[in-house]
Length: 331
Image (cartoon, rainbow, N blue to C red; front, top):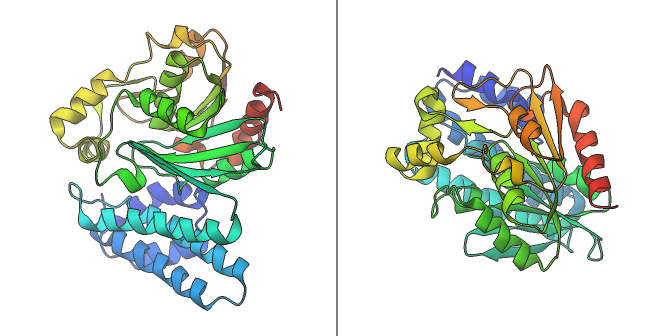
């Protein structure tokens, strides 16, 4: 993929993650090849670290640390080779920058780690319900701030996480099809009796699978989540990403072969909202409509012009999903 195509493909994802679109255009305009992606975005992130150190107020410093975390995260989306040190370093720096941002902006945020997960619990300590935000294949807890913020504004506590093969854990773990066990560990660690789940991209599969297995899941929403994967039909970039995150081609193929919600879907007893973008057409990925149809309490929201993760159409689904989750959890 040439650099112009890479920049265009990631534009809505990057801006939805909170990157300034004009700064994004300046950074990508300077690229001469896709191989320079990680370095360019890391440099942009470090410029925000410098601004944080020089900021005139704690709030400004916190905002720059938050911006740095997002730039470091998007730096991990470059065309790296298997477990490249630069990708690992960018993910670690994203994690560190987010920690510094929350220490300043939300000192009540609590870090919660487990054997296979890491993340931040935010929101009121006495919130009547908690929502776990689950990222996808090459996503991480620093990416979906808009989702987290929408839920926090509705009085919910929110745990944004990295799981196996994701974010800060990508260097030491690989993706696993039984991710529902990890979400079970999260619920145990949070000490709550019932939770809501929001899953983005492959996180949508993880969330639906968890809802089918764990009665503590009181409501679940998926955004651009796959119903089924077909390894043989994958485009090369997706095949490469999954191979890297799974730790090898055989493991990646085996993982893809196990992503199929045909059997779990009818067992999802809780309310389920499935969101798809009409322009989200990835070869080898079956969208979420069958999941909504097979789940006993499934609802389906299709945004015709939405792309993958619907970063180009937040107004068409994000407030609705946040309201739906709040109501489903009895807020």
